[in-house]
Amino acid sequence: MTRVALIGAGDICPAYVNGLRRFPALKLVGLADARHEAAVARGRELDVPVFTLDALLASDADIIINLTPPQAHFEVCQRILAAGKHVYTEKPLAATFGQGQQLLADAQQRGLRVGCAPDTFLGAAGQTARRFVDQGGIGAVVAGQAIMMERGPDDWHPNPGFFYAAGAGPLLDMGVYYLTQLVQLLGPIEQVQGLAHSSWSPRIVPRGERKGATIEVDTPTHVTGGLRFANGAFVNLTTSFDVWKHASTPIELYGADGTLLLPDPNNFGGELRYSQQDGDWQGLPLSQPFDSNLRGLGVAEMADAIREGRPHRASGEMALHVLEVMETLLQSAAQQRPLPVLTRCERPAPLDTLPGGFA
Image (tube, helix red, strand yellow):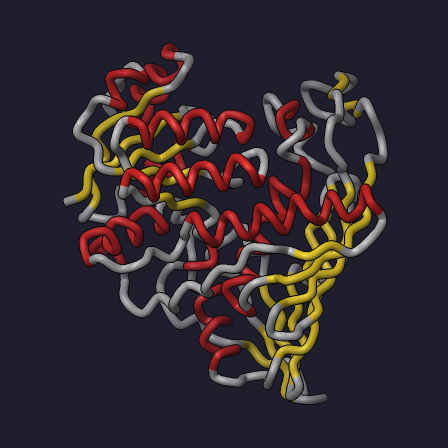
């Protein structure tokens, strides 16, 4: 059994606790937060043992999951690695590509693993799509589009300020789901060209309990760009916190023999549809059971991989590649020219067994 622990008692914590408890091969041993009172409250709510941060780092946990805000990922991950623990962090891997490189180098030097969300690509929709694409369901993929446009978390999140800080924004907060899904389907990206801007700064909360409050903006809130994949496919990506409504499919892939429509990659399940050439749309049945909110699936798969001595799927290497893509898109927008992506990663193998003794 693999012992896992959590650092960070924020809004995503309950989803992880509930997800981790679906895997009998994992034992949740503790929770800590820099705000100890927050950890105590969350531990009481979720029936999880509470530690101070130093005590958790000194505990018998094998993998520590980092659920802190993005700006803290690097420092907290460094502390976890220095304590001799494998680390699995919420996305993005770090606030900058350079920090991400340092984390992977530190882990390699210590003989430790780095895993990183999102793990939603391991869900039923992503894995069904992966098999369909690999089996030639729409022929060779030549193009696609990925669209994440919403009004942002201003009126529903209790503390939305960090979404608009450097290292966040719609691209790093939500675009990471789309890019990770695309990379596991199509492979690595070799060039990007971006456009980006902030529509309003400061932002005014439009409704809800915080209506009228202001939010300072330190990152682009609308980012669009072109992605050229190493396999030759071109995909257009748009991420925005500036749009009330739209009617586009989250991800569309266009192949030589047809088109595949994918659901929101922030979810594990959803409806898949495809057409052969100019035929009618057909549903594509999901091929595995992970179709509900199962945060921690990547942790369970990583734990299995460590025991079995093989690469894990929600890897730091893929997360670093995606982080470089996002950072390079913003640099491309600032420089008004296409830029190369220098890292490469392997497509994670399709998920062919249920990890962690899933129940």
